[in-house]
Length: 246
Image 1 (cartoon, helix red, strand yellow):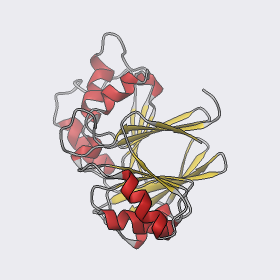
Image 2 (tube, rainbow, N blue to C red):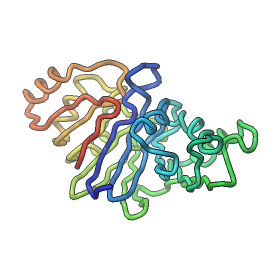
Image 3 (cartoon, rainbow, N blue to C red):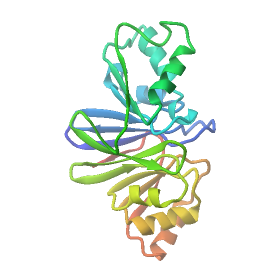
Image 4 (cartoon, rainbow, N blue to C red):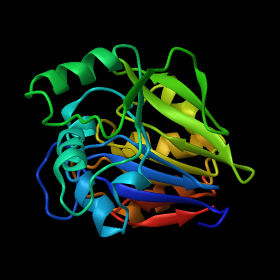
């Protein structure tokens, strides 16, 4: 792995079942660190499609506990225990907001012992209690959004500011997360076209990738509207397995 930072959209969809969009997930690869942000339906398949195995994924951050952001944890953990071609050997760390340990343990306890846990690796669950936290040497801000117990990430890599929002209405909290970003991945399932344009203008983020889509958006129209309002950056349609290098 190079020391460049790479962002891959593993899932740009929602709870809707679609062939070309899996549910919410983003892969961050930076200076030897891999982190998956959210783990919705189909993410396990997407990881396989880009050539990553069980032990390549050791850190997962959950923004909140909606099914379309966590549901593929079960098949991923079951495969970790029972796969004949790719059993897990490395410990897995899961990070999330208040209540994450209770939520994950309730999922695990819904199954018989040994179905999705194993003595072959440890499952470490970390509750994020401060706005700032670290995974290895990478520092993150875990910032609250106006959706029940929902959070986004803001961090620096290679001198650039990156942000991943999660579910949110148009709000000052969302503006604050995106503001000044070089690259922002924004969940747009709960905001309309006018909000997307206003967010671009107010934050002046250089590139905004709109994701978590219930509907297809007209990118040319959005860029034209934003430019008319004075936005000098770029709005980009998120698609599964598209990557951005920083």
